Length: 459
Image (cartoon, rainbow, N blue to C red):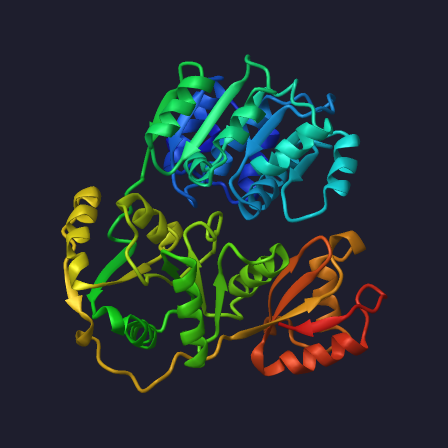
């Protein structure tokens, strides 16, 4: 028997079968370290990056501790961003399939509080939320945390960086002192340890795989003149031709500058920064995930919770200020054993950072001049897909299968030409191969989805 098999854990047979059906065949490093301790009721402070399988590392134990007959919040998961909270809630629902009627409620900003209050009135076993919105519910007395058995702080370091420490303290004080507290963080700054000492009881420390293996992520550093960064970025994109790339900048202004310049060069690019309305942010993320936009330019804060499958490359338009952020950035590529590419631009005056980063990674990092890359006549091509936005979502009972059926049935589009479909509360997004996107748009506008007409537009 594989020592990393979930069957080595004291889990119900129904949960083991569910895990197998979801593709959880063997445990990741963080799951193998954290699950036995968490299932034994221990408090944990675990160092793990996004994409390491940490949701199951806390999701499986909190589900085991639930009493399904008791419709009160028994588990609370705090996340730094709406996107991460949504991803976590979705995965917890999948992990909970082995039990009937487990209700997971997501409480985040960016959407109306009214429907959330209605959901809570009908009872919930698990609450996943962002600190600001959770605090709103506590103030309105629409959320009762007095029966919480398991508290999870996911990406705790990010929440503290974003200034949520007081909100977190207020929320935790509403939970029973006799609870299990599981804290997950990519880094261990002093304020994380201070938070742990206040709210955890004899926590076990777990730390795995925080440094990325060279075999999965190829790192390259290019020195250029400060005033040549934009040209150098285009040169890198046209040389390496990543299918999808996130370009990280240290400031919102640089995000705007890079976005504007790449747009002028005819590159399919989108920007992600703190000034975006939630609806616009959702659309940007959907386009990037659906491969109808090849390059996403973002700040670190705006990219929190960003989890993209098969991200070809991460590009540092500027090196970050510390090695932990660098590791966090490049860890978004090279997931699940796939090859990843991490490219960085730096000025000659920033060479010293490579020594600091190299010491942290236990590697020797050497830069090259940007001039070593040959000029390419071939431009970065247009993305494979175009995203169509449908003005109907979960609240209108629209499901992915309904959209696929409308496209492949009446619209006559081949199924292989339809990409990812994402259904949100009030809108749905579908990726269509560029060559047939206009045909699909016309047919959806004239036709019906689930017997109803919806407005459809191209993003």
